Amino acid sequence: MKKLIHIFCLLCCMQSFAQTNIDSTLLKAKAYLQINQPDMSINLIDTAFINIQNHQQKQAALQIMSSAWEAKGNLLKSLQYKNEMLILKDSISNIEHKQTISVLKDNYTAEKQAKEYIIQKAKIAKQQFIIFGISIVSIFIIALLTLINKRKQSILNAKMQAAILEHKTIAANAILEAEEKERKRIASDLHDGIGQMMSAVKMNLSGIATKINWQNPQEKVLLDKTIALVDESCKEVRTVSHNLMPNALLKSGLSSAVKTFLDRIDHKKIKVHLYTEGLEQRLNDNIEIVLYRAIQEIVNNVIKHANANHLDLSLIKDADGINCTIEDNGIGFSPTKIQAGIGLKNIKSRIDYLNGTVEWDTAIGKGTLVAIHIPYKENTLANS
Image (cartoon, rainbow, N blue to C red; front, side, top):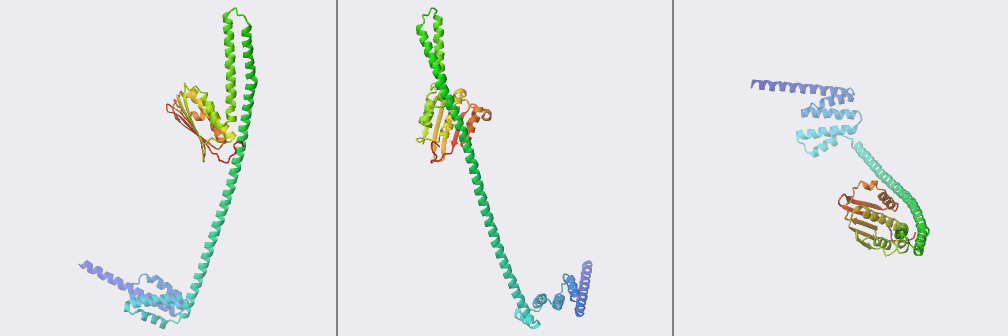
């Protein structure tokens, strides 16, 4: 208890000392104000203001600050401090707000300056509003110009892409046409040249066989085998010639050519089901040739390597383009062979020429599904 009393007394003494120190500061501030040094008064009050707890001292400090700022000619600052002092005074003396306003009117004649300040502030606000409006409009114009520039750039890029695509298409068509011309030439040479000669050889051998009196039966058997080999060679030449340039493709179109090609397959080894839709009209020559070659290559691969006994093939043309799927129930193969196989690469490169896609879904022991899609517009000319 004694310790508490000592502490209380000590605090009282410290508070009294602080108040005395603040009073001394206020007196010094007034003295500086009297000798027309308002800045010194303001600095002293600013330093001591945070430590002022006594309301009377705070009121006196605010009064000195108001007078100091008035002496400096800043009536606005003076009015602010005066207003704070009066509010503080009102809280102490419980004077009504009307009396505070009356005191303000009685003690200050700076109404004109205050009005000018308000007008000036309004002008500044108006200028700020105008600047803000101009900034918004400027930002909008810049955004609009940026959008227009991006739009132009996008159109330019689209035109460049279209030009590149057109150039690529022209080059692809030229390559395909050159390949097909070479195929036609080779097919014609085989059919009209080697095929005719082989047929003539067969006829000559058959004519010789009828005129010879065979003394040795084995010699006749040998000649018969030779004639059979020549006949088989003739058939092989016709088959190769037809595969190079099938007449059904030239005359009747893709659907008929694929059907003719599939009909030549030995259906005892593998059963083939063909479904077509929307192919009543002829397609673009390049599309028909590329699809026919792709189907030919894929089906031959199935026959040679898949060990399949069933194959489904569908050809459908709709608004999106042409879709071809070939599915077998064979042994499948590793997807890594897609990148390694020359035939599969050729299929993909030909489909790429037409901006199409080809996908393989396969695995060892699973069978194989090949899906081809080629974009095609209805207004595309069939013989362009």
